[in-house]
Length: 159
Image 1 (cartoon, rainbow, N blue to C red):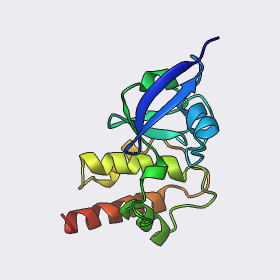
Image 2: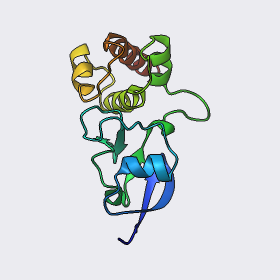
Image 3: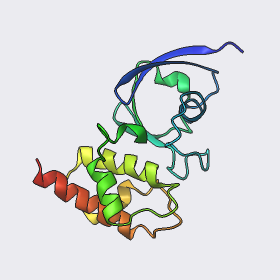
Image 4: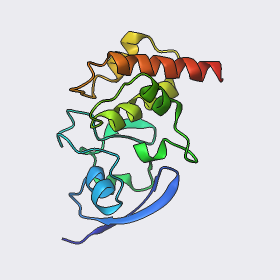
């Protein structure tokens, strides 16, 4: 099968790659572009570990074909830190011990960032609803919710 050439933007940088018609964004990120921050867990869209944003929309990268990213703007966990400095969410996740094994953490961070870009004053219920597509087996979610609340507060204070 002939490979498809795709031109897209990943974390603000123009990117070109070749992929098979059946390759997912997750496959290309991890195997071809060596961006292993996005985790592969279920490969069915059930766990959220592979969450990215595509044109500002939160998606599971295991469910999107790489060929569909032509001329799209993709944001991954690798794009969160800027100039070697953690994003406010990364900082509050550390401060609130909102991570343990780390498998869900990239997806949780990407999902939380997506929420806070739309709503800087979410209720606890809104945070839990927004993160419902991201499964964690270690933390029990309370520390994650507290970290997102703290990040939201810091964003509002610095606005």
